Length: 166
Image (cartoon, helix red, strand yellow):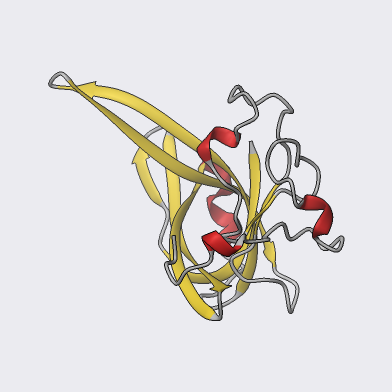
């Protein structure tokens, strides 16, 4: 699954040679979104791996950027306890166009049958900066036709409007 997020480069770290075959470089994005007139800021740590580590060099902290990334996860057991780790693996970074929505996230491609029987995996797609680009709204948002063609599917019901950021 390939996703995109637009925000500000908050912190960039030096590349780390983890072992003789694995290199990574972490960075933090600042993502802001407005909900019910309040601005909420989130920070997402992402990583570049292997030959992608150097693509961050041309950007400075504070620059608006658009990051294309994949969600990667691993499971392992230690001392009989199961653990999981999730990484946001960036594979492309480009300057964000002026005036783009900070904190906006787009899902580039999604199979039509996600294995969740049309219930969107428990996610209610009620904004949060997420956007599926208008390509995949079957079973996700019944109000998708009311978005005015702008790709923004945030259309809260009166019951869901509150002052909580989650």
